[in-house]
Image 1 (cartoon, rainbow, N blue to C red):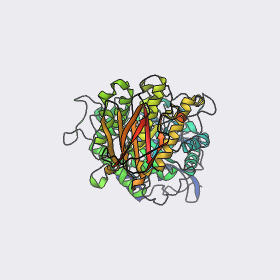
Image 2 (cartoon, rainbow, N blue to C red; image 1 turned 90 degrees about the vertical axis):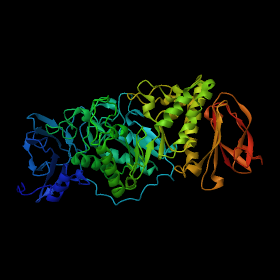
Image 3 (cartoon, rainbow, N blue to C red; image 1 turned 120 degrees about the horizontal axis):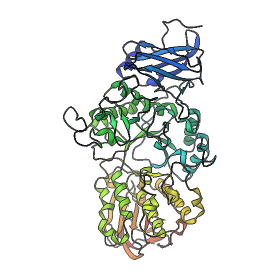
Image 4 (cartoon, rainbow, N blue to C red; image 1 turned 45 degrees about the vertical axis):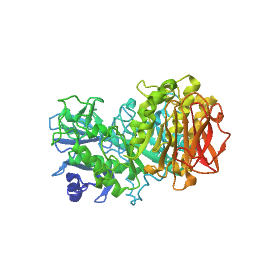
Length: 626
């Protein structure tokens, strides 16, 4: 039975909310929804295309014959109810644009699409009910050790020319990351994207997990498996730009609908992509709703927002005269700033358990400040300055490191200005940059020693931690998205030792409250040795809430063993050498202090106690009171 024409899928309230850009969950009405209307089972389809002359529905349920949608006045949404259509059917929209050109378009709110290069959308099962509001996530007290993964090239159990499925990853990636002690998995974007080589950073289907790894229910099983193993899931999210593929958002209704019409505002030269028009409230609604969608519908624990710097500045990567100033004549993008704040206001209210992380490389103020206090609202920000300075230092020959000592100390001048994540990310092992191991100075033994020291330095430094996959293997070659990681390296004790170090670093990082419980408190850090550039020795103490939680960190970043190097200690009694990157277990030479030492009542470095140490070459040691 066909329902009467008066039966509508989108009611007056939803139409008004969509028109105003205030619909918290636009995906609940836009897209394809199996429903029963007036006693008839079918699918309701709805799409926003306010300037279109006509919108037609094509699908396998109607033999891919055109079926017209009706325009709802005032909100620019077209809708149709198709009796007999059901879950599993495929469809597209044919849109006659305002320019008179017909274009076949994928549903912008599709929750599943064909395997690229196909681009039809699939009618999915009904949405999950909206979950109850969770409790706010702790932003500084809990340890956060992130394993960043491109799922298509982590491991390929079906062979070198196949991609893993979500079930493969649930079986292998989840226990692997949990077994190494990571607390979070961060996935490079999983939204549908036509070009595999973009790693997901040029998405066309923001609401659809890419079909490359299986169906959406497989992705949900993967997330559930991660949660069961104690891992949280962070997704890379891309609200900054989108590709200009004909089937996607570009000129969706024959006009610059999602993007800016002026290329000085709407085109990214660096990436040949289009920039969202965040000043249009329907576009903001589409994107804000998408952030909430992943959290509510899949149980995602957080979003890492890509390319925030490109959003904040109108002149980003643009020469003079080829960008449009803001209304005050400045370079700040007020619309993008308002959008980011709106995202965080909605998430704080609707999903306070979720965390957000900004990839932001400038000195823009208060990225992690509360929106109510004039900030952008992020929980964390990548510390790109720390990353560049630290990697540049470790690339220097140790003979020259005395002239670059400030690269290792400068980060503490601003460490408390934001709530930081310390990233050793995929960006550092692509586009000819080589691998992390390849960046290290010296012969192969020294390179591995430097790499181990780098990791121990990062885990002790204030800030959350992030390692890109392969870093734990001491991968000697640059990451290649077309192959899996070089797992055979684990047959070499030198590489297996680096993996063992990462496992122990994650364990100690979780066990030692001083290394995470006061991460945003400037009183939790104190330099002990900061000025010994000639010997490339650095030492500091991380303070916990109790004196016995304190952890002392000493780095000797030359290939010279230093005997009898006295370090001030904040506590009497025995101190255990709880970590030594030169341990033979990690592939080192086993130079150290026999596992423990005795503090002596000799004041030094502002402490009442001290002890002479043997510092291993190119090594970092951690001490804790026994």
